[in-house]
Image 1 (cartoon, helix red, strand yellow):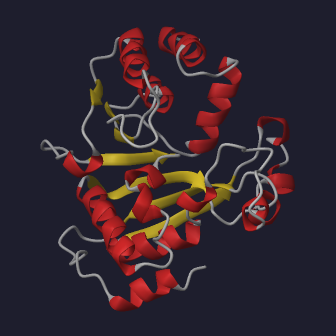
Image 2 (cartoon, rainbow, N blue to C red):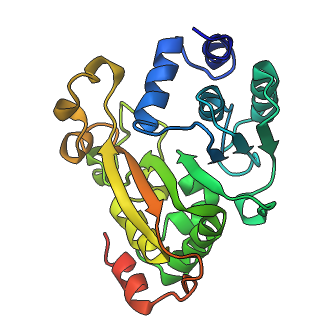
Length: 264
């Protein structure tokens, strides 16, 4: 095992909140399945303690920017953990930015991989809770994703992992015993996110659902939409930015807005 790999294992437990290095690696490998970080530039939006960004550095990323503004959804002291995570890895191409996504400007390079892990709803929580039915919320989020598009290389990957609002317990207004702290009303389904993002020049690469470590060798048992509806409803949507950068992505159609409103 390399020195950086050993550092990742230690930091993921000491700062990242994982009980074991194996759990941290399993989460990262599930999220980044089939992704080669070597020579890539990576942006993590809402990096938290920085475990995913650290994993990308360890796997050979050319540059990693951990964007953590400590705004909505952030935890007190998270910047201290993120700074310690970066310093513990001691890699000069691991950068931290405290800017909001809306304020983050490209500095001459573009990203190959952009990661949003349990953060897409925190970009604008009030808009996110209405984006399935309010055209104004649709426009707010399309502006955010249009900004993301402009930070990416053509052929780059956008990874969105989050909980879907479509959950058995949420439909009954009950607390989910597996995820008691989730406010389901400020989340959206992957179907809604696709309707917002695909017109901006993205195509779907894959959509998968959470499978716990215990069942990792049997993803067919739990890792699907139907079973997850009664469990965590946690999805991973991988999108590729495939359209020419000169495309008129800012032209937002009423048809798209109405489609989002009908996604209930």
